[in-house]
Length: 166
Image 1: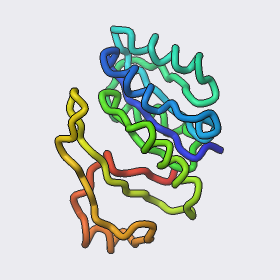
Image 2 (image 1 turned 120 degrees about the vertical axis):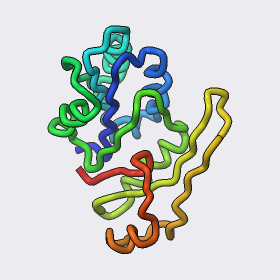
Image 3 (image 1 turned 30 degrees about the vertical axis):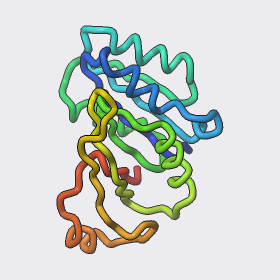
Image 4 (image 1 turned 180 degrees about the horizontal axis):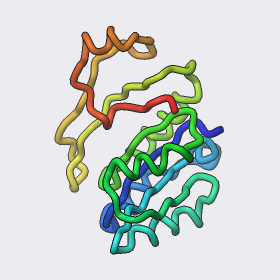
């Protein structure tokens, strides 16, 4: 079982996909813990080709699901039944991770007890690499909360902060 499955819904994302997927390439020992499911939603550009190039280069970590055009939700629904990670996270194809932070996050997931939801801070970065928004939740690090406790403290959580137990 992998530690984390990343679902990447993709429709005509050839401009962004190399950076998105490239940000997920970490040290080999961490790649063994990772599964990236790129869901090509009937793209008419090179999205599928780019995704398959990553799958060919890292066959143990990257997989591609080519499907007819549906919608964003249909991409998630196509990937969830085949996700093998203990946890699952959605990453939009026009977004990316700081690779070093992502590697640390994979190590963090490997070291925690099983929980239903992991909430992480994140930054919004512009095309020049400048942080435009820093989203922090100011939760006690490494503390488990009930959902009721969390909702009382931070009801406005963004999907970009969430990693779910599969």
